[in-house]
Length: 375
Image (cartoon, rainbow, N blue to C red; front, top):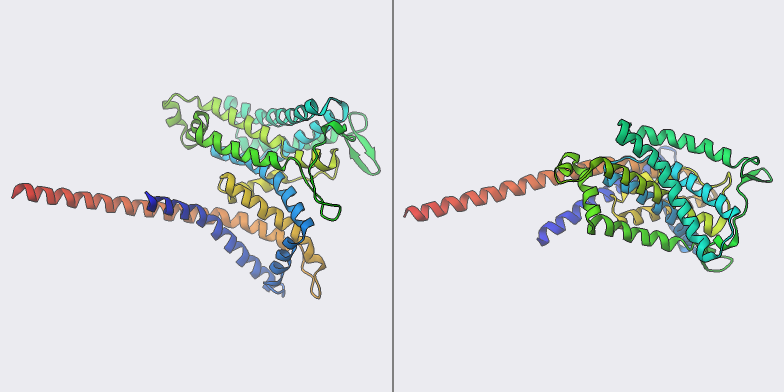
């Protein structure tokens, strides 16, 4: 049993490690080809970890990445490719900002209301793709891609001045939210910054994700349906209902991804609100192998590359483009798919070899017993 656990741990770690090593090597090749030092950019970025303000930026960014990646991972565990996390997250943020700017309740009621609005908005938007899949067989990939585009247009409409938009200079916003909906964080000083209060929500969601998927009947049914719909149906699981439920939960989680920033810092939705978070979350979920612990490490790595890379533009005596970090992120996603396939194939061969050895040993034992009995 101990040997099996060690091998399973090796298989789990081998994929991400191979992807990271491959990404670093390939990025170094790009640096060499452009006539740059292949080692110095990594040193410059690693030095940024020593600055407290950069540490805060990394933690805050990672909290948003983590929630979005959990939403993607929920779909993956059900064998669903929810590409619509980006639209669900942005639409959830804008609707939360609108409600927060026009509804004033005591904080004990205002904050739960805003969280509920974000969850329901994300779930509703993902539910459209879920309904199309279970009723008309429309691929969730196609549906969610189109819904992302529709969400962008809908957000532009909602932020117009003749709807709920408030123009601030050249920026269109939804107006400042009522202070009862603001969530205070951990203030580390004016020179360092503040850790978002909803960082703790991200941690709680990771624990709930693991408990639900690994310690509940619902989680078992969800994973079983993702592995084989026919096998799950044979055990009494309604595959279509599980598909729709998984999409609703994934969308609900995605709707919360923008709230650490919205309720902890900006307090309004504007044109400067970050986009592309949902697509980044796909790479993070893949790198983390849909495991909450792995996703947390991948989210921190991605946030580190985002927040440490600007230092490359100001390096002396030779400046490096911060786009090197973006190249590395892309290479990680590319390498992780290949490395996981290599690890999976190696694991299957190891398993087949082990089974063959056990069958051969059993055959020898039976043969020896027959010889003893014959004597």
